[in-house]
Length: 314
Image (cartoon, rainbow, N blue to C red; front, side, top):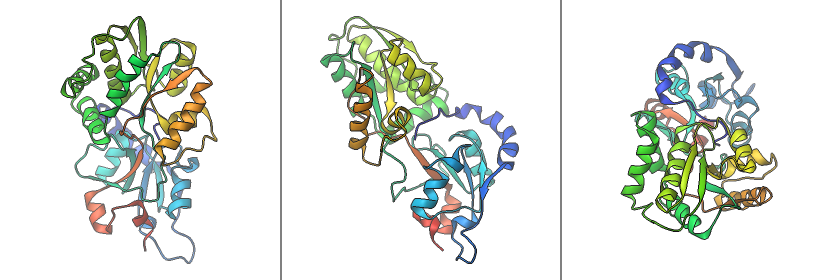
């Protein structure tokens, strides 16, 4: 789930220097259990975020849902360059990345066939005080065109090719014939982000550019460091709208939110939670940005891995 902002791939050079220290600190470890037949996972090292041992969607979920226990868990980062470098160097054989940031062509994403991860579709959220049907249509039209694979390509332009998020957003709107409405938006709007990472900035720029074309004056706050900060800004009126994620935002607002792999369920939950904050939840995009478990093509071929369930095979 998109809980924490990822480090930019441009930081990879510095990350390599940290890799030895990060991967040297062992997390939980252990094979499948005394007397049990060894699983594939029990032969592999998992490169995982710092919270993995206590995260129900990481080590706990992998064990409870899939029966997967790794030989060792090594702490890397939240889906960033340290995890990528650890996979490429062979320091770990399995890593956790974000679904819209698996850029390396030598990586294989394992199918979450038992749906451990919740549907974390990108969705616009906007203060009721500034929302209108015309604004809704503009933002919903953008959401309809955002796919997971398309979002990965856009993120790669920023994270790998170092392009400006505003330019990437402008090009996307032009290619999809979006943001062409020249009326229907009045007044001043401030567009924020869920957190300080590329994807949120790109989508925020899409929202802002389309609304500005429709007649609003638009300002941006794209340096909000985390959901905790951006939620406070939204509820307090410092920003008027931002791109969010169905499951992550629901879980941030309520630890008992009951999110699942059903996007509509998660949208219903989020609408209820944000209604109490005078915030509307618009149409969610097909694009899902969630945690995925990744191996190299070489590891996938060696062990016959295509899904997370395969890790539990003997």
